[in-house]
Each structure stands twice: as structure tokens, then as C-alpha cells.
Length: 170
Image 1 (spheres, rainbow, N blue to C red):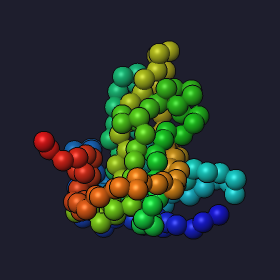
Image 2: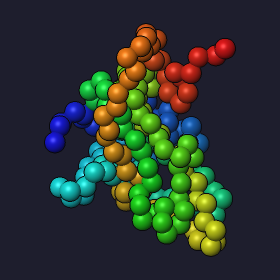
Image 3: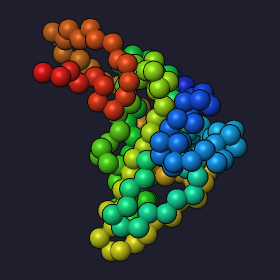
Image 4: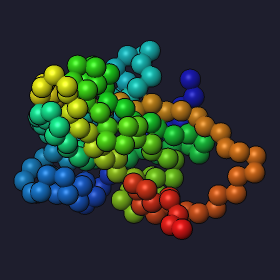
């Protein structure tokens, strides 16, 4: 196995911005920040690194939540972290990421928001099931993959932001 990345927490200031944007108030930010669990694999054979909920949440069918994880990742160039819902939550509840698969590029770490990984999910249950996730419970997973580029690639732009920041306007 190649060791190509390291998870870290973002600063309290950056986490607070994400928390207030997602949940509206500042109550509990400091304690929650100090309890952030960095992603980890559950077993030595696991491909995915579990991301843990920073607070309890419930989603009725059709409801959406944006979760500030408090996590960033520094990884070698040529690698990407792909984020998916935990398999069991997707299978039992149709819990899905709003962008289908989250793509965390290696240069996202250097963005103005410190590469803060935000995960937006929707309960798309067709059976009327409400999903409940407790603080500290794994709800998403990230898998590192190596990627290639074309022989005539000439990308030179530098990232400054997230969520579509690398798309040029034309």
C-alpha cells in the first residue's frame, strides 16, 4: 500500500464558518470542534476512510443536510479522494450525496477555506424511511484513487476555493 495522504482538522475559525453556514447558530461550536474525529478505516482490509458526524441529525424523505466535517486532507499530486455515503446508509435509506460523488482534489488543501471537506446529503427514501445519525457515527466514506492525465495536458491554473472553483467561465 502506498501512503499518500494525511487527514488534519481545519482551524476553529474555518470550522465555525462552515458550522454557522450549515446550522445557523454558534452554540456548541468550540466543544464540537475539540471532538472532531479524523477519518479512519474500520479494518485493515477497508478501502474507505469513515467520516464521522459532528452532531446528531435526522433526515426525513426528501430532506437535505450540509455537514461541515472539520476535516481537510493533504495528499500527493496525482491522487484524488472520492467521497461516498456509507454503504449501509445508502442501501437501507437511499442516503445520497447531492453531487453523487464528492471529488477532493490534491490542491483543494491549499484553498482559502483550508480545504474544508463539506458533505451535502439527501434522504431519497422511496419507502418513507427517516434516517438518524448520531454524533460520532460514520455516515460517509472516502476512497483514495490514483489518476492519470493526457499527454497533451496543459493545465496551469491555481485553485482558490471549492465547489466548482476550477471551472472557467466562458
